[in-house]
Length: 256
Image (cartoon, rainbow, N blue to C red):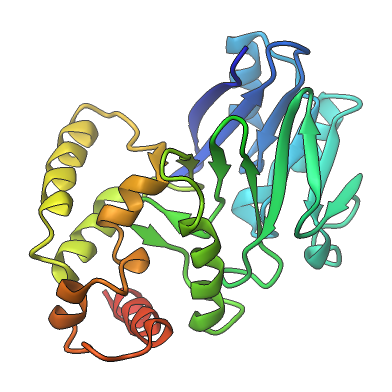
């Protein structure tokens, strides 16, 4: 049976995500922005929390971990080894190349430093799922808070290389704002124009714009399109190194 996923809002613009293996009933919360929405989602689905998979140390991703551990005895907390000093008390610390199981669902750990120095994402290749935290957003990416932009670019290249059908769950509902920036730097992109119309309708109906897919991001996300001649021409950087184009885009977005 395919993995089951339940997405729901948390805090101001975060998303909570529950991942369940129907065969075993094992259920993971991808990060824990706050506990109460996660507990309500568990009540609504009837699922039992067995794991919390943490992507990075920011408070809006781990703020609910302690309360969930108290409310769900036996839950296992998985966190990035590189952030061990800032995410204390996890049951398992993981790094690049290791695999975590939620029941029968196997998730590969991919280190994606940049937004934070210890950020990881979780990729389930057999299910074609990616839980990207704050590394990759729909039509955007996280700020490079704890590493140079070129480091974040190298992390995004790992994700861009995943199969295009991979469905991507991100940590925040930033799509519409990201899309407006994308249009400002990639105005001739027809796929981007079409997508922004779809996003406007979704948000007007109060619907989430996630998940996205790797293929859709390759077509519309300027941070994954730094080799595109049209985007380079719009930035007046036709011959620049791709990492430098990315760094310039990230700085433009920081100021937007």
